[in-house]
Image 1 (cartoon, rainbow, N blue to C red):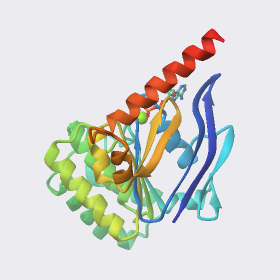
Image 2: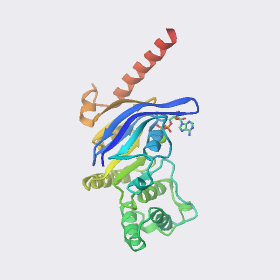
Image 3: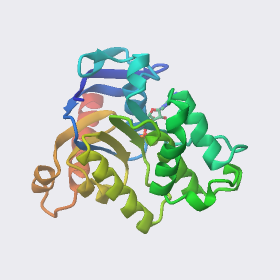
Image 4: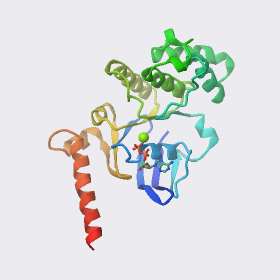
Length: 247
Ligand code: ADP
Ligand code: MG
């Protein structure tokens, strides 16, 4: 499902956080929202699921305009801070999310096994989430986002606090889902992770400073490091801010 993000402005109180964000995402792409902490990634993702409303602009999945309740059943969302229940076991958390997504009871058991296996939590399924490590919670949270076989996945910093081996297996899994036609949007502040994606939207201070396929983005740098594009944006932004002050 193609996603169209058009001219999104978002403020909290009087502070503007997103400025005219405008780009579209092709079906089956892995797109990374890359930007430093505080640049607006989570805010954009919350607009994308319809949890908050932008003052200006529109988001569409195919022909469907956000917010739309039915659309939510085709989207899997993994929040930055997990939304798990500490006093339930890992498995019962997944049962809860399967029910929330209206998954038929006779399909739940096998799907729960599948996603638990995927995130390597089969052996810990009966432990209370209160006793899970940070990395285990991240993995369970990913399993919860996948439970209803969504067509679109929105993952907010899914690999933070995850060891390199598991991180590799998560990226491998995301690539398998892509092959099945799932569209994946993943936010990260880890610049290296950009190489895992088809395209990247670079976000700096609430502005989309670049959006292209990853090879083209890297070709715009001298060092082959994506950081460079942020340094240029930071300089331009500082210059713009000081010009505005002196005029
Ligand atoms: P990122 O996910 O890239 O770290 P966020 O989208 O969380 O960035 O935050 C972008 C900016 O918006 C920050 O300055 C943050 O303080 C502000 N912000 C985010 N959510 C809220 C909120 N609910 N109320 C007020 N300010 C917010
Ligand atoms: Mg964030």
